[in-house]
Length: 403
Image (tube, rainbow, N blue to C red; front, side, top):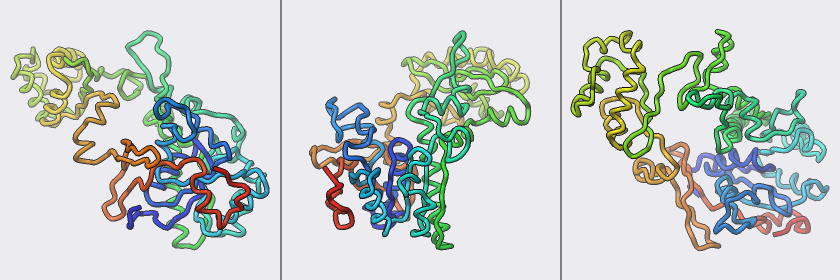
């Protein structure tokens, strides 16, 4: 572990699975000691594929690996009296509880904030639930796709060039990631407050809230103009239809041609670039320098750019456009990101993590931020199920622990 890690010395009990795992990872990779509390059979996420060498195994889920770096794992039966006593023992030197259970369940176990804060007044307690601790939806079931639908993201994501195209759900657990980021920020803020006031607090994170406030412009347009935005292919959802941005290149990849921010200098640079290949068509006409004239003919401008882009590979279009100040970018696949030298070499965005039990190292997503004084670090690979039972056997009744 990095000696100057931002959260070194902070101990967190993570009593949750998919709702808490990303927040726990963010905090663990910043140096916190995150102890993942699991049932004897392991958390459900350990059974989510794909798996190492395609062999289902509690310790081989690549999904679990991704979200649980730098953490520790203990197994206990939290629904039993002994298990609850073990949690309280661990809290004697813990700073934070991060939990993602159904509202009311922690109270049934005597492990809710109101009960624990009497004995541990400086405890920071963060609960992540689908719809919050209170309200008519608090007991509703949920999933990532349900949250994206209810929160408004699916309504503004999709295609306008396919007849009757349905809403599209972004992939990758976006709603859980949003909640994880907000939870991690909330916990760090609460720890700072605790350091100033010597007082803990309860943080109520609703995934639904997190998604709803992250829908870009759809809410402001409705609140202030009573207008619905329109789903548009690869573009911002707006009340009006904008000109298409995604154009195919010679290598069959797409380039995002952002036609906004075209001041006089950029426009002339763009036309000069097209002219160097005799592909400018009529865009060299001086009338196109005028914003209003050009805006009225932007469909035609895009047609010309489309005929230009198909002559060249996307990487050439990308780097040349950027060199003249145009905010254009290729639409990349995951493998493109891995091989991007800017990310892999210049920014060191990916991390190599060693798994000693497999005698192999694997490439993981790396730091989402760079702190020069308190650096981020994946201190260890994800824990094996119950790997740290023995480490905490001094404080825990070993009869309730199993590997």
